[in-house]
Amino acid sequence: MKFAFIIDPLAKLDPGHDTSVALMEASQALGHEVWVTKAQELSVVKSQAWALLQKVQLTPAQLVEGRWVVEPEWYAVSEAGWRPLEDMDAVFMRTDPPVSVPYLYATYILDYINPEKTLVINTPAGIRMANEKMYALQFEEVIPETIVSQDKSVIRKFLEEKGTAVLKPLGGKAGEGILFLDKSDRNFNSLIEISTQQGREPVMVQTYLPAAKDGDKRIIMLNGKPIGAVNRIPTGNEFRGNMAVGGRVAQTEITEQEQRICAVVGPKLQQDGLYFVGIDVIGGYLTEVNVTSPTGIREIDRLSGTHLGEEVITWVEQTKMINS
Image 1 (cartoon, rainbow, N blue to C red):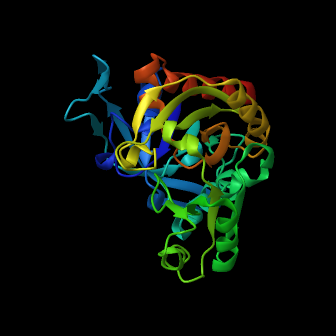
Image 2: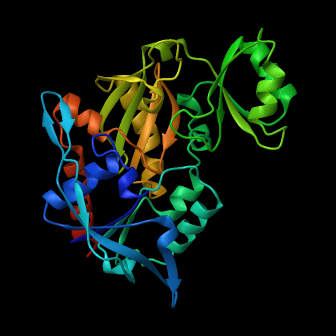
């Protein structure tokens, strides 16, 4: 089979961390061709999605004494050429957020892939409907108390009631722009003005969960079912557990309550064509649903001895055979 990955430039990826690299390595290990392109290298020609594609040969990372060891020259690429994305058996949309206007336009181009010929992961319509902060609001029974507003007085009222809260930009990633709010903070007005762009952009504000100090658990979901998890624990004076801001990772299990959360969320993910997703859970509450380029596979495999990339690619193989 041929698999295309729409990713950020290869040279900017961290092969010891990035899930996109783990998925590409797994594809190659299972005998498939691996191709790469970027969101800005997509076109529609005669009502068909095309991409400027390069074939990739990877030198896989090796797990040595509990850490990933990577060759300095870990990939080689062919000459780039234009071809229809329907030549591919599967296309992975793995461009990092923010989900900007150009990002949305890329998903519109991907709409012009015939789903009967090519599996797109995740579906363009699913990515568009699933803002990674807002999407969780429909699962009210498993999320902390949450509001979304750009109105300072609404946010102030919520904070007065709760005492503390966490503010999240709706378009952020990797913990960027997340703030801890305290009702006694004299900087409150300034923080809200900056975060909402002077009241022009709504933000999410959630009840602060004290369990955050024990970790922010990333659970990887494949076709609506959990397949692995890693705990991300804040370090130093940082209250965020995200790996991108220095969170320490630790091996973990999926608890009974977290299995319940997955059972609540899973059917909706399947319905919306969100096949490969990372959900975030703190203290038994769902906080985010990551659908654009969820990460965590490298850390889970390293800590738990799993091979989640191969599990994902095997699912793609099976799905293609069922639908062919």
